[in-house]
Image 1 (spheres, helix red, strand yellow):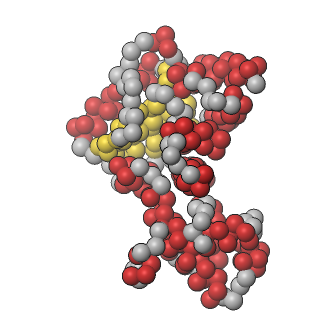
Image 2 (image 1 turned 135 degrees about the horizontal axis):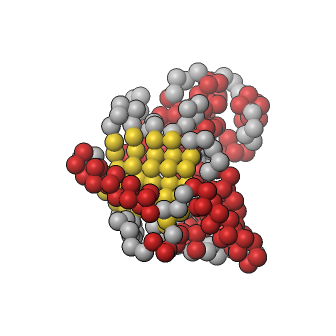
Image 3 (image 1 turned 180 degrees about the horizontal axis):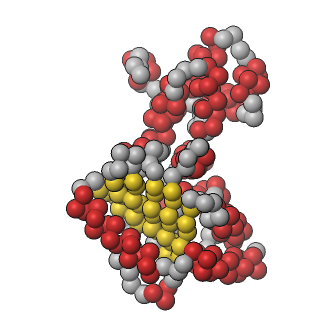
Length: 277
């Protein structure tokens, strides 16, 4: 996909919005008429997307690509826009995540991003990025939720998450947010390709204490890993290093509660947050 010099000077969201507007006007449609064509998206939302003032959802982009028969051009622009909202060190990794066959993740202090509700993600970003504007926070949240669209594929990836009990124990400012977050995990974990385990406090130290790890299995059989700490991370593709990380994940898996006991522990925390609320 080639960009004009004028397009290259725009933000990725504005670039995408300009392309959508050009396609709409090329068909002689108003925003209201386009809203009717793609269904389920208000004309005001479409207008904000065209102006680059709001990030488009993956669902909207899929419908626009199908309606305008643009052969994935809008999806490509959307991917570029989403990359900007992801930490620089992990952009290449997130692109791999979109087409992965299996995702294994361990988190030590917060709920994994692909399991987060909109409310939880917003509170997490609001706390971690205090200088961000409301629009910037909304864009970050939308980008995180869009990543979860991989589970809506015809063949979604296998997903295995191990969460440290600390991520369940640490409450959000509004206890209702944490309650709904745990309800979401319990419902999501009922999917056939999803496993969620909790590594309990009483297991003591473990190989990934204080960090987070994501392992991807790719369509070509390759592996990639992302190791993260406070505000930095490293993408790992060296086979030797990945073997070490897989070993760490396997040890954490062996130390974690079985999935049914993990669900029971989450329900106990859920009950506590329900009473607090």
